Image (cartoon, rainbow, N blue to C red; front, side):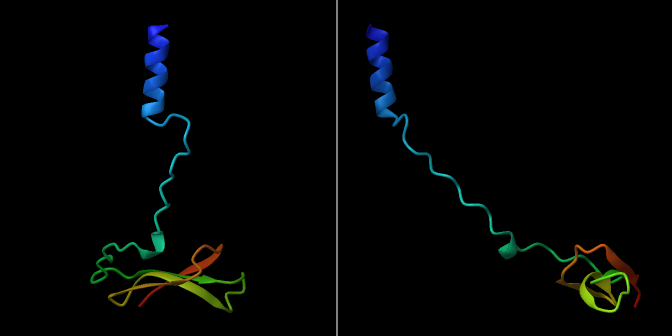
Length: 83
C-alpha cells in the first residue's frame, strides 16, 4: 500500500499523462552549408521536362568554375553539360 501511494504521488509530481510537446521539424530550406569547390571540376547535370530535352527545368553541379543549383532536379530526363 505504501509503495502504491508513493508511486501515485511521484506520478503526479512529474506530470504523468499530460500532453507531450513535439519539437518543430527543421527548416531545411534555410540551412546553410559550404559550397563545393568548383575550381578544377566541371560536372553539371541539366534536367529536362521530357524525353525530347526541349525545355530545361533545372540544373545542378559545377560549371566553368561556379556552383549552379536551380529548378527541378528530380526528373528522369537529364544530361551532363560541359563548359
